[in-house]
Image (cartoon, rainbow, N blue to C red):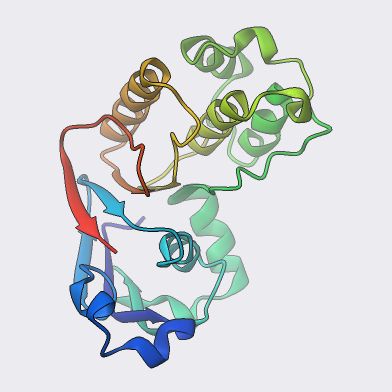
Length: 219
């Protein structure tokens, strides 16, 4: 449903008085013309407070407090209706927010099944196999609020993958994972993205997905 995302002179409104600053001039993203194309992978390196989570929220349509334009296949997303965004979030754009946003009172598996019911993309058996791949199968029926932050992150990654997508947005996807789990998550994300001919846009302030084929951008 989406082949290309293009940004033109994009800048958070909160940075509007910094347009001439060296930080903005050094950015590969802010105040630039840039396209994200399928099926490439992009890694956005950023310091805290430079707008990486804002970038993800803009591309997902959660926020509109920016200058410039965001185009999906040449169409300005500012004109999209709520129904259009709902359709895109079900079928074209998957998102892992930095704050994870799991329902703490629901079990880990129910957090994923609730999302999966929007499209019935996977069976429950498929999802439990993904849990097993990420070594959280023994926590699948435990309330998400009782999981460690690293376990919650792996559950949220499965939830993000439980839908069709052309673009996968990952905000700090492995910030709480050790090297072994990072490798396993990276393999899963790469496999799912390749099978759907999808693009990956991931952000990081330090620890990042262990994927070799990223195009690196600095925020």
